[in-house]
Image 1: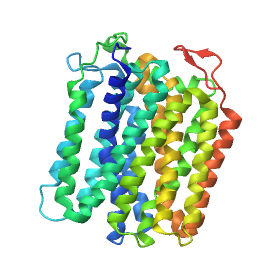
Image 2 (image 1 turned 180 degrees about the vertical axis):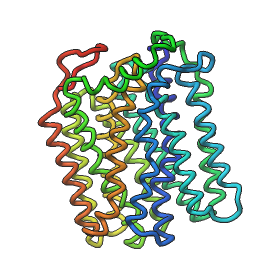
Image 3 (image 1 turned 30 degrees about the vertical axis):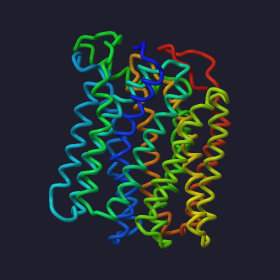
Length: 414
């Protein structure tokens, strides 16, 4: 289902959708660790809180159903996106109702529910992106995807920390919910074209599920590709899961952490994602993964060097470099992931890959607290950089430009 929409319109719509996902996720992954550390929670406990992102790892289980069923009136993808995004905003606004500080159990329960809603919405959003983008638009599309998501995470993380430090819980959660409602406007105005996917009767649901979920088992080269997905972002997340607590432990206040993530992270992450998306077509998929992956490994290693009494400006510089290179690497990886998808199973195929990335990054984040406590921050960041380097080596050994076609008309992973 390709459309006659102009490229800027497509990119603007996708930017708003991925920003919407990044807003609550940024709060719970970037702001929450700082708040929990301020309350005295241990590094292992903060690391294990990342397991509340489990719905992002399991979303592949219901993705085939969302490929198969959709609203004809609201749109195949839009029919899921609108109500799910609205429910997420309502949940966040509901947390602002009680007076005073939200209890930790209530907040963690909200994390799980919002993650479930956002992960389900992500399935439909990824399917819509594959439906809308032409082949020549994939680089820019994924650059905007990563940029929008990172902007959302920075606003939900860094900006919300600043608001919390100044005003407290209620204004913070009200701001977060209001931003999410505003970001819903573009998709509310969007009119999704009728789906060109073949209609199937209910009796064919079981074969549809088997084809969606077992396709990767039969796909040549899928094992090597899945290992690449696991390695490519795990090292970075092993490092960044402890970045906020590291900044707190070296004496930075919440406003300083919020400024560093909100301004520096916002700017460099946005530039990195857009720059990576623009360069992917020129470099080629394999070279982009190699170059951007190497830069990402080097940037993570800078965190280890910054543990030796670095000043705030140096910490800000290192944070900016890491956000820049991570945005470039993520844009390259997501572009290749999108090219692996079959049109009729776009949401399912992309979600299987994205779920595996979430499992890898979530597991890395979950053990990050144990690693940082056992090794110290310097060696923890060094280990993280080593994992990033292993990923680059794996790309060099196993990933090559697609040369043949497999079932569904998609390029084979070689």
